[in-house]
Image 1 (cartoon, rainbow, N blue to C red):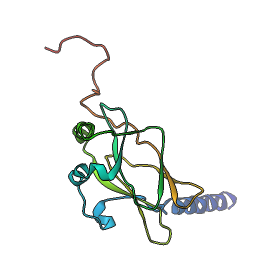
Image 2 (cartoon, one colour):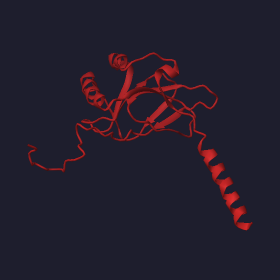
Image 3 (cartoon, rainbow, N blue to C red):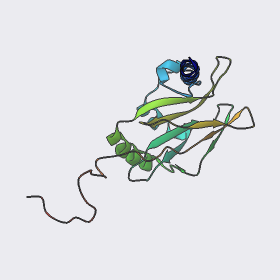
Image 4 (cartoon, one colour):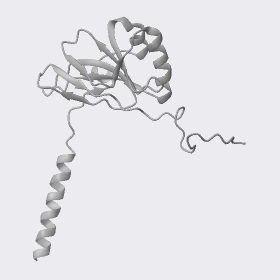
Length: 167
């Protein structure tokens, strides 16, 4: 009888633990259509001057492009991995490179506990952007998006510096 009680208690604890894991937090990254905005990456590229534009990852393999409107009413602090895009030609080159890893356009929003979400930025990436709150309720911190695998630059079956021809 004693082992059965322990087994039942452990099973209940496991169920309670799994139930709490199932409750996901409020997402801060959503598709523009889910936010009620109709915008494309081409429109963001055309309106380059209206945004603060940054990229994450190496310049030869960017992992994310961030378009930050200036009039959102929120402060968005960027981690050290974000680098500014100075001109339109650099943006065009970064867009060509990032398009090889199949990114999507997302809207970064404030984590609105009351159901309202404010626009922070648009991000073009295949990955998830990690947004953190700060002590100030109107300020947020965005971590750099880690470099994404790109088969153009990295191959699985080749050793580095292997100069043996494959014929």
